[in-house]
Amino acid sequence: MTGIDNRQGDVAMLATDLILASFDILGNAINRNEPARTLTILRSFLVNKLPVFLSNYAAIMFPPLSIETCINQALLRVDSAAFPSFSQMFDLLGKSSMLSEARQEFLFACALHQLIPEGSIEGLLGDVPMQSLPASGKYIRNELVVQCTTNPSRIEELIGELENMEGNAGEIAGAVTEIITTLCSNNDTMTLKGICNCLVRRPATLDTIALFCAPQALLQALCQLLDNWQEHEDQGESQPVYEEFGSVLLLVSIIRHRFALEFSDLGILGQNSFILRYFRSGCESHPIDELTEHENDLLGGWIRGLFETEGINDELMSVCKPAEFHLLVATLFDQSTKACQAGVLAAETLKGGFECKS
Image 1 (cartoon, rainbow, N blue to C red):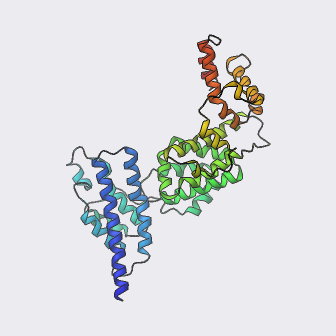
Image 2: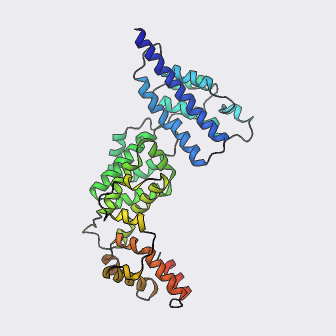
Image 3: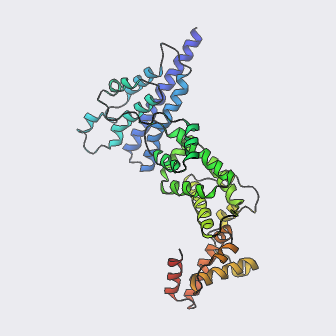
């Protein structure tokens, strides 16, 4: 039994050290005045990710060792000046409330994952807790997917909850990733548009999702959707198609930029991929003589629509696919500003065209 006991001791030491290191890294980041994004990621790791790791360790621990013991030993070694209790916090002017909340959030997340009993939190904190377990309890990924399938508005609620420090972010992240992948497969771009817009408005939630799901898992499905965009036969107007395409493209662009991903991470197939062309040269203007006849026709149509009386009509948008439009935007803007500089297009007309039609 000595070998087993040694392995048990190693696991307990690893769990204790992992908890302590997570607190130390967060505390040091705050002392170094790291950016808010960094602090939020570290805090979310401590509260949302670490209890998941500890659950795996708990499964291979046997009495007298327990995760609760590891948590208690780690917290005894956490610098109380860096992570004060709430009663101590009031005596530490200038200290971020994040520090005082971190221990409590972590312990309640551990209780949520049934690593410790809720009743032990006050003793571990050395203070009366000022929060409680989430009323909805511990989330289950499959149940969340069913809820969102039945009620799509639930998806946006869950995305908002990704910013909570309660321990449920992992199940939410998995559910959101699965739902987005399914919507891409089913070409449900209308529902997908709402999810993309919600994530774009809350970019910090992407960091939380990335703690549990590789960004590539989202990007590959989204990029393939854009590369193989199919319009719905029953969709009468073209503007909603542009809006849906644009929402997906904006989310893809933000994810790629936020995580500094390479083309190989996007799941792109073939050199003719729209996404590949867009990220390589979408921001570059192309000389008129390098455009195809079809591209020249589209460019002329957009110029007339923006700056002449006929306006942008559905016929133009139906002829010009969203992907074609986004590849023409830089050239359209460049040609318009050059026409203004040459005196062909009045400055007010240029301004009015881009403002009114945006």
